[in-house]
Length: 112
Length: 109
Image (cartoon, rainbow over all chains, first blue to last red; front, side):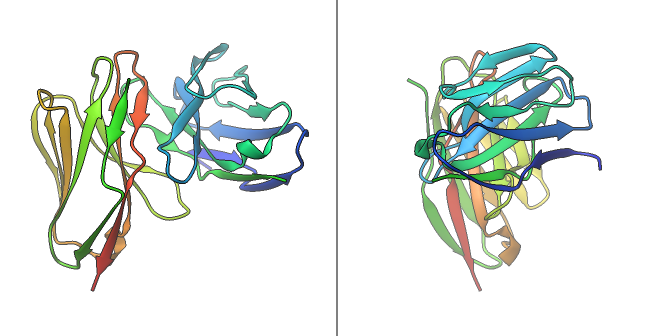
C-alpha cells in the first residue's frame, strides 16, 4: 500500500521491557520524524532523520533510540519502557524540511 | 523560549464561520502550518503560510502576520465533519516545527 504505515497500532508492554515501533513509507521522502502526542501538549518531536544513516535528536529524545538504514524505514525503540512513555506515537515523512508532513495512523502505547 | 498559543476549545454552529487564532514565538521563522486532526486519527495538512497575507483554499483560509507573530485559520460554511482539533505549528530557523496543543472545534447543529 502506498503511503506511510505504522505498526503495531496498539501495544501494551511492561515497565522495563524493550519495545520497537515500526514506520514504513513508500514515497521515498528524505525526511522522517517521530512524535509523541499527550493530552494537553502539542506534538513533541522525539527524533528525526534527514536521509538514510542520518538521524538527530528532537525535543524529547531521552529513553528512545532510532535507526535509518533504509530510506523507507524509521523504527523507534524504547530501550527500557517507563510509564511516562505511555503515549500516542506518530511517525511522519516529508519530501523536504519545509514541506508538509504526512503522518502515519499512530501507535497507542501503554506501559504498565 | 519558543511557544505556540491557541485556544483550547471553540464551539460554532453548522453553516457559520469560525476563526481560530494562533500566536507564535519561534527562534527565527520558516513558516506557519495548520493541520486538522479528527479524534483518534492522524493529523492532516491544511495550509502553509510563509509570507504575510491570506491564503484561500476552498472553505478554509489561513492568514499570517509575521510582524505580529499571529496567524488564524478561517473556516466557512461549517459542516459537522469539521468537528476536529486544529493544530498550529511554527517552523523555526532550524526547520523544526513547534506545535501548539491544538484547538478542539465543536460544531453544533
